[in-house]
Image 1 (spheres, rainbow, N blue to C red):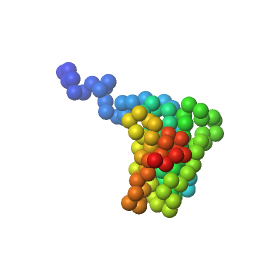
Image 2 (cartoon, rainbow, N blue to C red):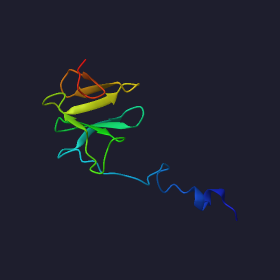
Image 3 (cartoon, rainbow, N blue to C red):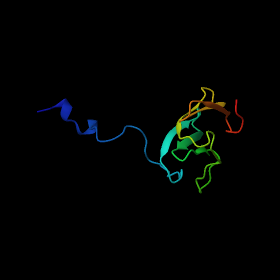
Length: 111
């Protein structure tokens, strides 16, 4: 008896996206609370419960897998949300206090 729902090739045993490569990036001692990728997928920013924001550049990263910049944009407040602008030239940072910050792409200049 031929049953189309019993086909071995149509199993739902895992994700349907490529997972052949992975790396383990070290954020720090506390858990990551937020992360974002830039529109081109070349940079990532992580924020953690230790108030730190780390900036990662995949195109310039070497085998040590280190971030290129670490900063505390909101002093002693946990980072809740980090988001690149649609064109990737600015970064919105929202922390546990009531004031959001906007930084340039390098995380240096406040607007």
